Image (cartoon, rainbow, N blue to C red; front, side, top):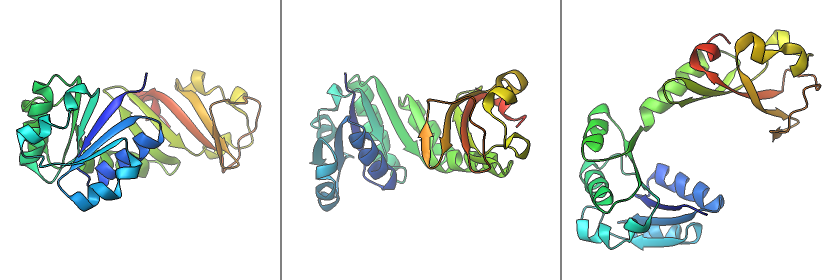
Length: 213
């Protein structure tokens, strides 16, 4: 069954989420106080509503109590973010995610009921730092206290060898979940296919094991 999402606030982050969730087949409700902006995204979502997101009655009128996930994307607007978070939790929304732009805002949003707070700048800096630490790393995704997923180029000593020869699980305790070759990413991995310098691997493992790379 498809999940229902509400995106409250159409800043750059809200726009990105709207386009990608809807393209993936999800039911998406968007709301923003900017009527022109809402109109621009009307064909990129399931429902588009112009609403004052600082008004609790206007927020309730959106019908978000029927949503599986509400994502509040107004990182620059603390008041509306707090109001939307509080109303969503009061209405019994199972998962309320809010965007923050500072540690102080993050703490406030958690205090008023957010289930998860995304600090965009902090997350981006953390991932960038991980990439800077290794010239092979293309991207780094943090999943909780222990798990990480990394998009990387093969180390120089891996080039010309296949995954069966490399024994990455035994040596590094990591699992290769996808391989990109010739501009195509696939989870159907041929363990006998030699890696090239342009190959890309998506691997998952504990952070302590990922750090060994």
